[in-house]
Image (cartoon, rainbow, N blue to C red; front, side, top):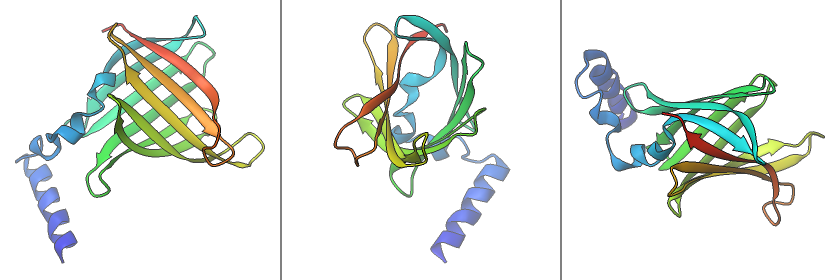
Amino acid sequence: MLIKYCLLLTVFLCSSGLGARSLCDSPQYHAFDFWIGEWRVMSKGQFAGNSKITKILNGCVILEEYQAVSGYKGKSLNIFDKQQQHWHQSWTDNAGLLLQLNGNRYNHGMVLQGPGLDSEGKPVLHRITWQPKKNNTVHQHWQSSGNEGKSWETLFYGIYHKIQ
């Protein structure tokens, strides 16, 4: 009954325009705001691509739009899941990859992780860390582990340089 009431209240508030902004104004919804902007992404000293990170849906969701120089493209939707009390990311790309990661702020950055498969179809654990730096950059470290987190391999290390 309580869930039904909460859903009805949410639908009413959003459809009426009342309180739609306040639904996602708590500090948890701003924990990933350091990533918002337009970025030039460098990896291994080379230009890797561009990334545009925006808030959408009344500031409740962060949309990532990434395009690599190679033609690789991906998008993610990121939201603080109030019921689970953690952040969630769903990443999709033009190679057919779906990553679903969960996590929270840690050490002034964001750490999200979740299960996936390696190129041979074996289970792996993915972990992505975003760390804002004092020089107005954000460092993104994507790692995978085939042994339940005992050791990690770097899949991508990108440095985001703010354009806007």
